[in-house]
Length: 264
Image (cartoon, rainbow, N blue to C red; front, side):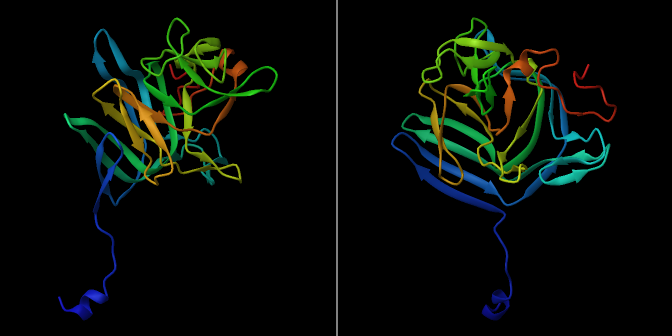
């Protein structure tokens, strides 16, 4: 093509490759220039099943949902009853982390993502960016705990308020993870709608030291430990009394036949 013809063409590469580094790792991030809107259900998922446990185990996992009634608002849009509310994502990427021993980890994520994530989770490794309020109205970052009530982000089975927010070690008040049935991934905007987040990813790390993954915009670093690590950012704030109540945090509608807030 001539220079004149090329000058009339605008566009963006289908794949972008970035090379990054820190003091421990060299990173290669491959980003696809595509947008995704989806609603998907997975009956049963188990990842990192080794050494007598599972890093992430859940049933009835769903991305996106279906509006239960007319006039429901999500992401600044109004939906009619029975209308799909998709999980939205842009520019999916695959990132590799290497050190002197070779491949130290890899992760899959989205440059921008928002939408609902629903599941009945029995084991979780990673971080859930939920905030909880107690009976006095005080707000806390939700902490993950094991079955004995000890704080952990590896194969956790409970979530709740820690005994010491400055140094979480044990549970002051916590419930089983399957009480948190649906979460909205994203950031809270000034108008009350859910905005996009760049910190939704699943990582796989080789060593105990883990990998310090940089967010796509470079503003934050998220430390992911050995094995599977799911970073589930949400700006939701929930009363602890709701989690300990009869229904917990109810499930959004994820099937064509509405099975209710408890699914089954």
